[in-house]
Length: 313
Image (cartoon, rainbow, N blue to C red; front, side, top):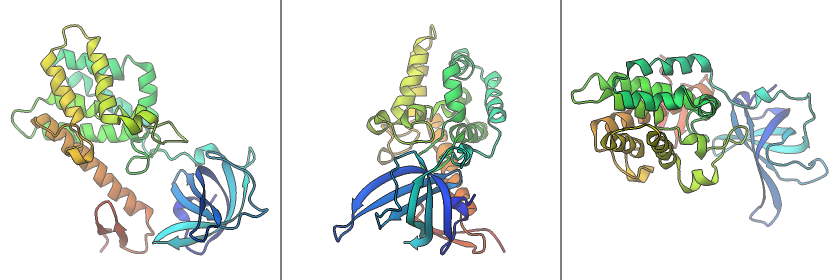
C-alpha cells in the first residue's frame, strides 16, 4: 500500500483510501468538479476530479474507494489529480490501514493514568476520579480509544488518552515546583480537561464535530460531565467543585481561544500551561516527522507563523 505520508510530487498511484469528505463544486468558469479529502492511518490528502467522465463511479462519504491519480503540489501541499474512481470491494483493503492510531500501548497508558489515583489525598477528588476511570465502563471504553482533535494534534485513535497522560505528567511536575498549589486539583483537572471531546467529536472513521461539538464545545460539555458526577458524591464541598469547574472552563487560557473564563487560580494556570505545552510540541513533533527527511527546513507552519527546522547538524 502507498501511504499518504509517502506520496511525492509526480507519483502516479492506483490505491485504496477512505473517502473522508466528498463535495461537488464549481470552478470559476462554471464547470463542476469533485473535491475530496482522502484518509489513511498516516494522514489526509486533498483530491480533485476535474473530468467527470465514465471513469468516475458512484461513491459517498466514508466509502473506501480506489483512485487512479497523479500527485501534484498545490500551494506547497500535496494534492491528488484523480482520473478514475470506483468503490473498493471487500478484501481489497484492511480497515486498520485507514484509521490513524497512537504508536503507544493504550492499555499501558491507561494503567499509568490509574496509578495517579492512590496519590490523591482528598477523598472527594479521589472518588470523583474513580467514578470516571474505574467505575464508568462506557466512559472508559470511549476515553481510551477516542481522538483528541479533528486534525490539529493527537487526531488519531488513542490520541485523547495519550494527550491526557502527557498533560497529567507535566502538571504533576509543575505542581511540586511552586508553593500554594493544590496538587489534587491539578491532577484531577488534568485528567478531566478534555473529556468533553468524547461528545464534541464523533468516533472514527468520521472523527468530525458533532452538533453539540459545534454549538457548545468540549470545555462546557466536559465541565457538565464532571458536574453530574459531583452531584452523585454525597457531601462534595461546593467551593471545591467550583475550583475544579473553573480550571476546566479556563484551560484554553484566553477568551479568544474559546475559554469562557481566563485562569484565576494557580492550579488553572498550571493546567493551561501544561495543555498548551503538550499540544504545541506535539504539533511540531508531527510536522518534523511527516515532512521529507532530506531537508532540515520543513517549511512554513501556519499555526506558528514561522518556518521550522529539524535539529540536525
